[in-house]
Image 1 (cartoon, rainbow, N blue to C red):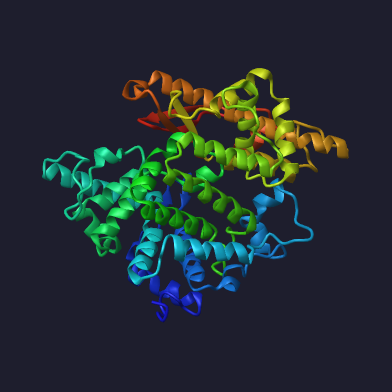
Image 2: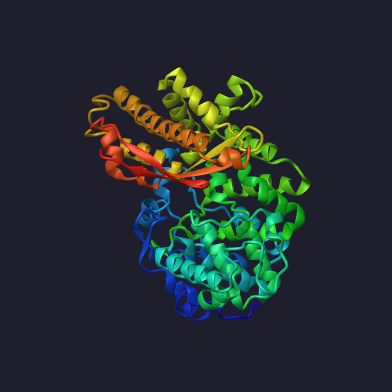
Length: 502
């Protein structure tokens, strides 16, 4: 393996030219993506290739290749992932935010010693997972493949039975609580992987894997866990339930699935540059490693609520926001809600955290109460928790727009002096918080009036905020003070924001 010129090319072009021959699924990344808010999906191919390159650089111990583009003077870095940190965190004057060699070594240790990726079969498994994991974003692929599966089920009179695994696996999917519904494209992808005929037709790279490897993919994807949501405190403790089950039953499978998500994040800006990882810099890696170490407690049988709360406290401590009060107290809920908002904004400095608290203090007591209640729901023992999907992007846009428009200021806050400028930031962020409150209130109404409480007393409900993350929406709220009308299109455990007239 270590002598293989394919898995360890000397130049990126060798991988990018050869990848589609070994993983033909890359050809699907064309057209449009509803999951990406109606954007074109072509950049996802570059992101998959960037993730594969990141895997190769770590495994081949090529630190210099990994961090080539991580330079604060590099316009690609500033306009890529670094733009988020530019607006929300302290600027690094004396120290670059480049990934530290010790962090790179720990990533390599996690890959080689903990997950034990040390043979061609595991390398192929990870590469394949990196290629197919985001196919759910491709509308044409999902519609075509899902229709094929549906037709097969009609022909065989199975009518969508989910308890039948592929012909070479014996997995009790009821026991693993893997639910497949057309409202969740990630689960549709899982259904395609599980169906032998659909897999052979649409996913030849998955088909050529060994049965036990396909089982690892199915069990990993079947958890529904998304590491990025956990790191940004976008999710709720209930999202850890199936991951905890997997960690207890098959720790290596759990670790491999987490590793694939780290690599997926490492390639998240691959469409900007393939010369290194734009995203996995020092701050981001620190948060990912912190999350993985915390999630490791699941293997020891620690509960989902305790693991989640541990991570919230650790994030708060790094920002100077101590979480000392119990979860059940009013102060404890407020502390945790503020830390979750910092996580969604990818705040990494005490200055940024103070801006969040300043914005919090602008809210009324009733608004603070709603955020405190909703952002402390676990979805395990207190009813249904709500996951505001894409809330980090939504809130970040308010922060970014405030910074970009200080000179013009708009109608929300007439900025004319340094002191007034300081007030503009928390005011703009408070507008974002109020929009999030409206989303959470509407989502709670949908949950309470749906059949979900009849199906289960607890769980988590995902509401997609993609349609709110439009610049004209943000500007209408900040400057024109227009009221944004929206509703939630609901299906099973997933809701999506639908805009009305602005």
